[in-house]
Amino acid sequence: MRAKKLFAVSTMAALLGTVTLEASASSHSEAPGTASDPDTDNTDLWAWRQGTNLVVVAGYNGLQVPYAAPNWKKFANDALYEVHIARGPSSLDDALTYQIQFSSAPYPVVDVADLALPVGGGKEFFAQISGGGAFAQTYSVTKIVAGQAPVVLVSDAPVAPPNVGPRTNAIAYMIPNGTSYEQHFVDNPATSVITSLGAGEGRVFAGPRDDPFYVDLGAVFDLAGLRSVIGGNPRDSVRFTNVNAIALEIPLTVANGGAIANDGTPSNAQTVGVWASASRRKTTVLRKDGTNDGFGPWRQVSRLGLPLINEAVIGLQDKDRWNRLRPSDDLGTFGAYFLNPVIVRDAEFAGFYAAGGPLAGCVPGGGINVLKANRTDIIEVINLNNIPSAGAHSITSIGDVLRVDLGTPGGFPNGRALPPGGFDPDVTDVELSLLLCRLAAPVPDGVNQAGDGANKNTFPYANAPWESFSAATHNPAAN
Image 1 (spheres, rainbow, N blue to C red):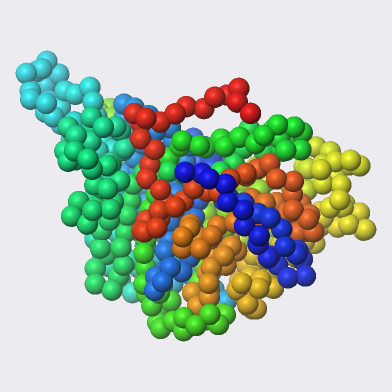
Image 2 (tube, one colour):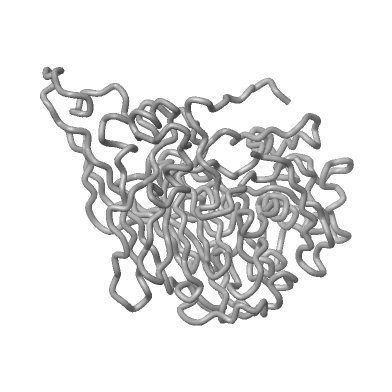
């Protein structure tokens, strides 16, 4: 599932020649606030042109072990999940927004002393036969075009349930013998939870998926002690884990608000900026019966556009503040982080740039301070300037959005694709090389060492979630 794939990627002209890059990565539990509220934590975002559609896959609540019994993970019923699309070179405002809200059937309320009820009546040990929780979740999708009234595209769409195991498949889900979880809930049109958004509007999927992220978290966050540098083989910290994913397949004409010249010619007018978020009500009241009531306006608590920006660029003290603002706020509020990356200072503290250190070769003739300040090269990459695969663009709005030129082939940072819609190179290597070395040389690999394993060739592209019954556990002593 995670067979090694090597991609020779020609990146930013005049900044880096050809380097070998692998895998994919983004942000998991990167801010103090979302670390304690994982249901709303944006983990990853992919957006790319696939045929005549813009495909967007947004991940939430990462690092899920498949055997998350007895309640299992689900989307938050009291949160607002959104996919935002800005258009053109000069605006970061939403031209198109998709709002996704979830609800779960409540567990039946019955007399505690009544144990004579039939199975499914409210006194259950196994959640999958309870008729509630993660096993009875639905959602709505509302489309908002700027300046127009919201339109509900679908209501009560089914969420794919947890992938528990063969007995649950046969007894609770009543999946025919010889048919897998994935075949039943995704591949078979008669039983699939993939839902049409209406004529000319595309499709949507929501449910658990295999997490395509690949990272040695233990090494990265031990003051960047990359095992390939200090000794040892990198470990996949998120192997066998799942995420909750929302996938949208949006016709290009809808995403662009008009016709697309799909001829490979770069165009500012056909470039969109995609980001995803999650919000909660301003006030939450906890009731004695265990329910919650939300009041007031929605308050954004998480967001993600480009991978690793909050994780690797924004300082720890500002990560929650970053999550609460919008891309249009980024330049004025957080511009100093892009121009003066704190990760360079911290890597210097850890000895990476010292003589004999793994990044000693990145220190330019002007000394380490050249890497610490006035990093306009970072802004150029974010704005798709000088990227051969995307062509020349004159993007004037600076913010954390994933830019996709809808008229040209994708390839990070012109979008970010899950194979086979394209390839998702090792964005960790790309971004760390950019931040730490001005892309003068690839950072010694030790963060990601394998292909992301996303090999499903149809919507929703991310692989089936790991099954609880058969999932393996990590061997902490393994190299």
